[in-house]
Amino acid sequence: MMIWWIASAWAECTFRADLSEVSTALEAAETAYVSLDVALFEKATTEVDFVVPCLDAPLDVATAARLHRLRGLGRFAEGDSEGAVIELTAARALEPAFVFPVEMLPEGFELRLIYEGLPAAPSDQVARLPRPRGGRLVLDGSEGRDRAEDRSVIFQRIEDDAVVQTTVLAPTDPIPWYPGISKRRTVLAVSSLATAAVATGFYAAALQSNSHLTDATSEEDLVRRAGVTNVLGGIGLGLYGVAGVGGVAAVVVGRP
Image 1: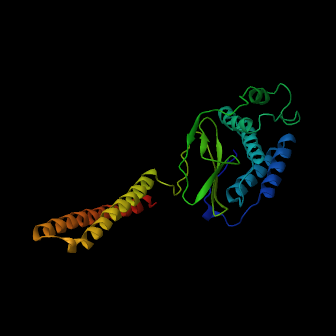
Image 2 (image 1 turned 180 degrees about the vertical axis):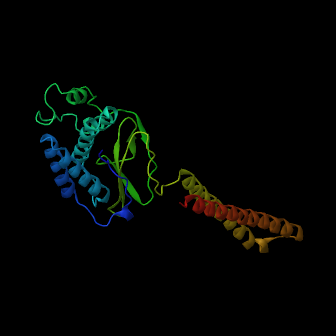
Image 3 (image 1 turned 180 degrees about the horizontal axis):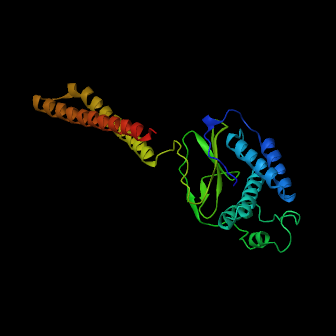
């Protein structure tokens, strides 16, 4: 039985593979499939499994579709018709105009009929993934965060223009963990800044009021002016405290 797409963290990769290596491995697997050479097909697909998790560049849509097609062929060969449909649905959505060569899937062959019956338009069943902090996501060769829920997807995470993670996700697979931008953190940070701005206004008013204490016309007027100054200063300092707590909370919430 073939082992498909062994999950491999970037730290486990001892080399970096480029897209040409993936293309070479795909071509070898496709040639073996057409030749009905089972041993060579298994060897070639194992090579694909080996290089894809260690890619050093984002996939393009055409290569992503090609990978899904190969996975579909392999699943069907193993007797996993449901798995084949999940993969070929992804390939069809990415390249709806693609037609399998007859030497790969003859006319009337069951898998060819299954493929041709799949919807050519991408499904609108998507889930929005969290925005990565300090990076971006590439799904099936396209940058974005909308993950299709009815088919498999090739997930890549990019940081500083370098691919740090590549894996394939079945529809029911959870997304790999990655540091994301928390909406709660953003709200706390914005609220903290706004509170600090208001506090600055109160404190400035207190300083302004304090500068006019010498304008008091009587002891009673002086006491009144001093009271106003103290109130304004107290409110300003209190709001600065609230802003500080909010800032600390934003940092804590944003930690992985």
